[in-house]
Amino acid sequence: MVLIHIDWAGTDKELKELDEAYKKACEKTEGVEYKGRVIPWNAKYHFTYILKMDDIRGLYNMNQNWDRSRDYGKMTHGEYEIYSKPQ
Image (tube, rainbow, N blue to C red; front, side, top):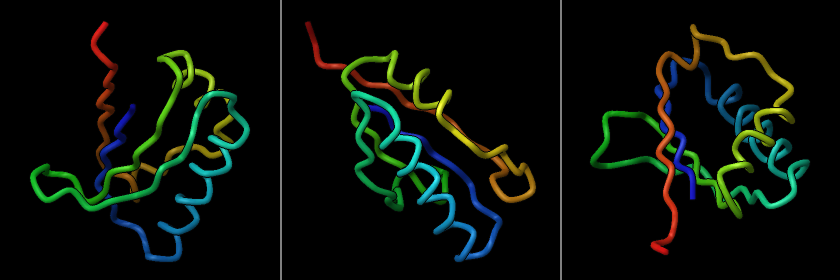
């Protein structure tokens, strides 16, 4: 499971376009599933994207399928949280 926390300074329309970009990149990547965007109540970030993946290689592969460059004026801060099941 990967949580992608972001701070957002763009418009609602642009945020929905970002949602679609994440969905598209996940659809193109085997073993990666877009679960949605949520608002974290206990983290400093504005939004969190939740992605389910078979393993950590999925994050690398999804980033290879990402077709946008980051606009630092709109997505000002971000952080990945990566989780796995105990072995």
